Every structure is written in structure tokens, then in C-alpha cells.
Figure 1 (cartoon, one colour):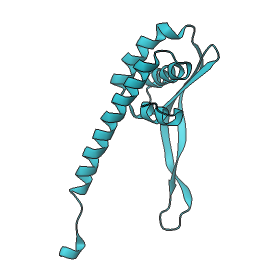
Figure 2 (cartoon, rainbow, N blue to C red):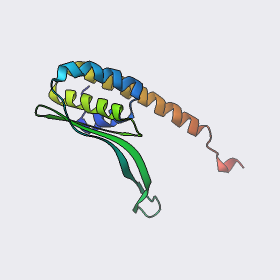
Figure 3 (cartoon, helix red, strand yellow):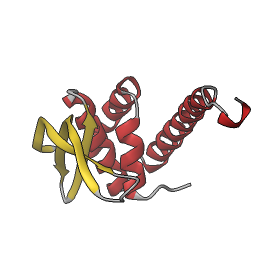
Length: 139
């Protein structure tokens, strides 16, 4: 199944560095000349919504790594939590490959595998949270 651009960026942003970096390495020879426009760390505001009043507020700041590249006419972008510029660059390389149609089957297979892994991790975490739920009616 093909993933829309915003969804594939979300999947890549959550992918483990141990998976995303080696996969991106395989794409470098296929992409041709890569120009790095941005490779930096920085802070971004973390928005939240007050559930009682529905108003937005900033909870604080989060450290992110950001990469922005071009490969000919195609741009690739990556932003990830933490201070791992290599993982952000790997994300940008995969993004550029997906947008240009380079190794599209391999990229889509990688995205699908990462999405399945993330869904399994989310399910396991939700099961752990559910196990702590207390039914106040039983007291």
C-alpha cells in the first residue's frame, strides 16, 4: 500500500536509528549528487491542547535534529527528536528517494515494515497502560 507524504514522514521520524541509517546508505549511490541545505539541531515548541477548555498552549521545548537536502529538482526533509544528525539525514535521503521514485518498491517495503513494528510497539504500550487502569466502581 502506498503511503502519503505526511504519513511516510511520520513513520520515518519514529523509526529507530539502527534501522533507518543502514537503509538510507543503500540509497546514496542511486540518488546521485546530494546537496545539503540544512543539517542542524535546535529546539521546537511542543504544543498541547487543554482538554477541559480546548485552548492550545506550549508545554515546553523539544530538542530535534533537522536535515534538508536536494537531489536535482527533488527535496528531501527529515526532523527527528534528539541529537542524531545522521538519522535526520537518513530520513531526508529516504524522503528524497520516495519523492523521486528511486527504489520505490524497496522504500515502500521499508515503510511498511517500520509501520508494522511501530503498531506492535504501540499495542504493547497500550496493553501496559490498560493493565494499570483502576475501575473505581469496584471499591
